[in-house]
Length: 180
Image 1 (cartoon, rainbow, N blue to C red):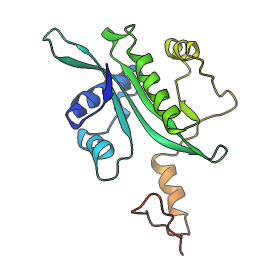
Image 2: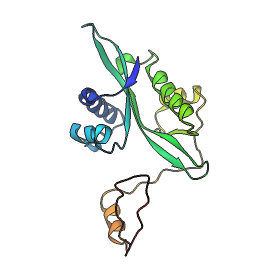
Image 3: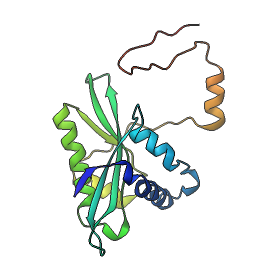
Image 4: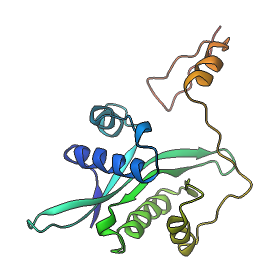
């Protein structure tokens, strides 16, 4: 079963993020706290959304076996929002049970229902099982595109060179003019 995450799912989501980071050989980089997740998913201005894949446990109740964490993006080319899938994870013991496909299908349904024209995500180039799975669904690798990222010192250095002060908008639907 796939359902929207609730605040009660924060511990399970946090644990699965750490499991995913370990699988991706980056556990030391997974620094998000449960409190940060709670704020990002359920705070006054949610920045992301999550779905939970559940199955019955030996104790009889449902158990979270996977999650998808996503946020809206926007395409200037199509003039529509889209979905960017930040993380998709299914616990090893639950793989092969259709949970990953069900999570992706629900996100695709959200896209279609809301008129979003793109559903995008990144995958590590060495993760052949996931790449094969995504291709089997009809996903196409964006071969000509390369992801770039600024973090740490380079991010701070670029920020310190900014000459225009900006103000975060309390209303994300309203632009705030930039001033010097």
